[in-house]
Length: 264
Image (cartoon, rainbow, N blue to C red; front, side, top):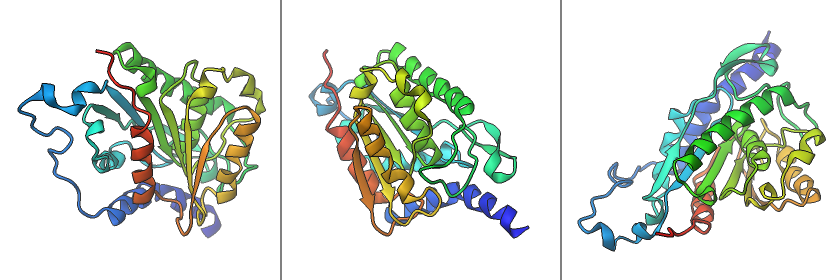
């Protein structure tokens, strides 16, 4: 009985682990008015030269979008004043590695811990990718420059981020994968367009991760390189299956360096 329940317990703690890690590394949250500070002279603000930025954050298995919203309070640079954040929640689906238990899940996962050779579930993955693409397309229709759209995700959300960015027909601002893995097989490689290969990728992974093994993350960039896709990989010693403040600080700088100025 304990053997059956162990993966359920591990994966159902994604919400708790992520939230605890965020507040452990940054116990003092900024002023709630930070993201929209008063500006008596808007035309003199440096943010007026920046176009709208869209950051889509995809959570891990068993988690929820709202539980991850504190992440945005850590992005304190003025360049993010025009940023629009979205933290969607995955639909409830049965998960094979948890004996069919229904929980928030973007796509099916067959085993835990996840290794570089873990089986892929292409049908449910591609369905989730279409959902992410619809959110991106809505933002593009609203007028956001695709190169100011960034997709980020943790664990299962990180794996979905990778697939969604690479299968999107155009070039985006970037994709950031935290504790993720390559969730697809070679059957979709031909669907990756030359434009999608230009989207910058950042991959961060804790060396002490026992849920998505470090080897699963480490195997990603070399695989992508063979496809002609460059990826920045950063390893974090001592970090388990969670997100650290250090990772988020690097993400802030990484996105900031890629923001496009407004043409208006």
